[in-house]
Length: 333
Ligand code: TRP
Image 1 (tube, rainbow, N blue to C red):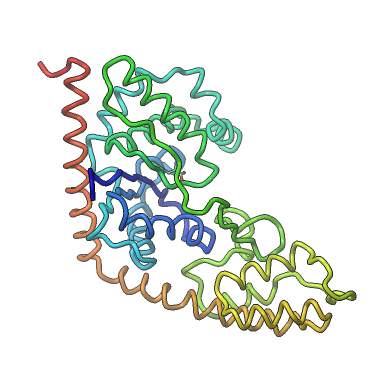
Image 2 (spheres, helix red, strand yellow; image 1 turned 180 degrees about the horizontal axis):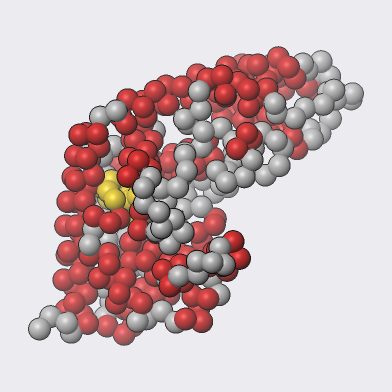
């Protein structure tokens, strides 16, 4: 090995349960990256305050995110797995970066405009500077890569702008962070109702969560839309049928997929059987993970220790950066 490992950072908002889309879209990326890079993965509890000022459920939600990520293969020994609010240096860097962020560009952010529309009664300044806080999270570790989905591309572009502006004004300290994904084409996890992809906010019955009980998984899969089947050999599949095949490709065996492809192409597919098979394969896929999450959640002492160790690692890296930042800004008197 020559040189140091590149640094990776990403954040997960503690709002809602992990679903299959998150699993195949984000977590699998994290798990792969943990061996190759120096990784910082964080629960973005401060960000959640911009939209969820009521903190009564926050602790449980933070624990759940940690447990779900660990159950899916993130190893707290390999990565720094921590909570945003435990790394106080974030707040300091956020403050400096706010002086480099222009109101005009913040007001143009798509996620800001969406939230203004959704919550006209709570357009707080934290919401406006959300991308600044996100930038602080990332560049605090001088990260080069940020595994995120498409919806975060604008935030990352802003992070590059803010990092660049800092470097230009005060000196080269920060790499300009890039979005990162192992898959050239983003893995798409279709929803069960044939419209779009799995999502935590839209139709909950069309989304499979890691926390779903076996019977609920079966019920959701059996409700997936089908029709009376193709009438011509080798015909093109309608979207909602392609989606069921897509889900099978994620969790079923090669033989099972080949069988149903064959049946489809020969017009003797029985969708009831296909969905039963998919339901059982989903149960086999999800239930061990759900049980693992519950097991981890039952051990609060362990979760506390994970957070504490994670915060220690993250603060070590953060403090080294902030030393450079204060020097560069001439604040080291
Ligand atoms: N804004 C991200 C989201 O909504 C969460 C997040 C916070 C994040 N800080 C980050 C993502 C830093 C990547 C890097 O999903």
